[in-house]
Length: 110
Length: 112
Image (cartoon, rainbow over all chains, first blue to last red; front, side, top):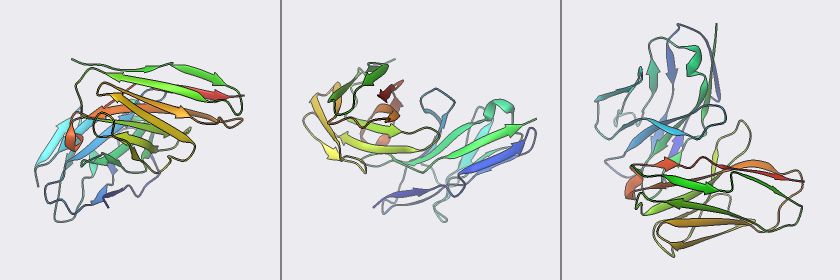
């Protein structure tokens, strides 16, 4: 069945450094929808980015990701981390139901 | 814009009690979901439903029942609450294929 893998459970960074959160997926569907959700403390997850176009960069709120079907990846990046980026990030794959990765906690320090 | 509402926001129950959580959405979304989230951990799918009266088990369905009475509502029942259980239950809804996926604000459960 469909699956999503986020290899890092926790990423810690100093403010100002670049962010990269890994996401790979498995699906038999040739045109997958990929999503990134962000969940801040005591809040519900909300949509950050989505894409279904191969090799096209999608951006929102300083974050960006590019769907690469050749490598089944949809890594989340940001050029410079901010303290307010500290949160739990989920990568997800669309289908009959949305399949979530295990989540990556991002902690940004001064 | 639409809204997805979960009730109650907080639920305190006793060990062995049957507890029901409710979720309503006015997006006219086809699919609805129930997740459990334990502190600092990821989302675990309990049940989902792709249309009215449909029910599909997730990875964590044991100990829970669900009911999709109509397209706009999806309820979850904890069949026998476990002592010291503490978690957040999140409801979500989406169009087919997972687009427009939206979460409710959650129900926080504490069992004493």
